[in-house]
Image (cartoon, rainbow, N blue to C red; front, side, top):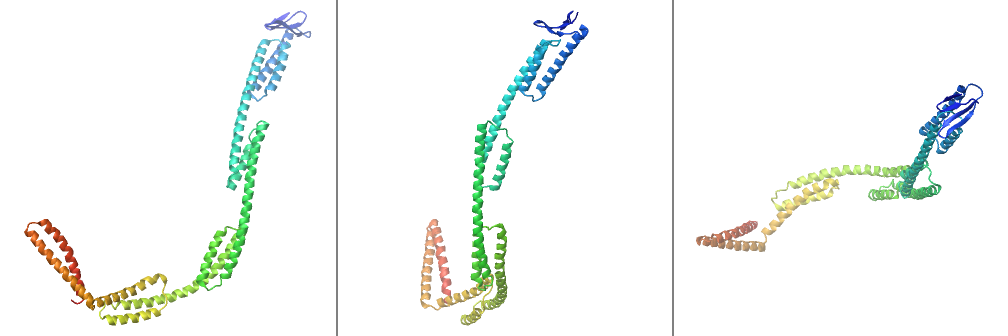
Length: 409
């Protein structure tokens, strides 16, 4: 008979394994020595140890499903329970029991993880739906369209939810995209209609502009071109393939007209520059009449200068105020001299001036006497007050005397 700590072979060749429940028959061995029998069944035990170790590693390091792991554990447990190996079978059962607990824990972890991923996917899809519904109201057609396409790609990359939830969110998401597409299509249809209307308007404006290009009615035609330009801008843009061609025709017609007008105006400017030179010479001749001596001869000379002035045509607009201002200055000086002559030779005005002068002189004399009296009485405050009044009256008197001198008095 042969034995070791975990098994033995009796004299009949029966192999036993020792367990917590007592010895269990492993099998019968007739092919060799008892030692060979024990070694054979010990190798079967080592094979179970290796298989359990491999399964433990798979459970720990791979994504082996709980179902597949439980199937593998059950297969190994059947082999252990069959007692066809010699070794510490209880230790193997303990490892299998621990592995069952590990698989169950992993399954719970994965369940929690799947629930977490599902919640995250739900939240992500709800966010996509909310953003898509906001974009559905946008008028930023290109940017919103590109963003909606990006949202579709993001949606495709997310895990599916339960069928009901996933279908409901997809319905909202798809409806938002459809609403945006419908609005965009309507917008561009309206834009196409507006551009077609702009094309018809601009065709009409081009035809009129080309018809006016040969006009020599410079002022009204230039004004009409300004009106046509305002109408052009108000019409909006035509289709791209028409806009540039219409603009080139419209602008070209204006250029023909304004080039012709510019040529005529250049000749006119040359003529007006010559007129300015002549009027500057007359203004200089008029200025030599000052200061006025013999009013009658000055008046006659200025009349002659003015007649020649009127016979000269227009001068450049920006130079007109200065040269005309020089003539007006001489004219005002002559008018002032005429007014002074009239006042000097007017008896009534002279009488009024003499009367006013006399009144003011009497008032000044009276104030001086009052001041002397106040000083003599020691009433300096009254004297000071009267002196201020005297200053005002004296100024009026000086002015009146100057006016009287104009009458030769």
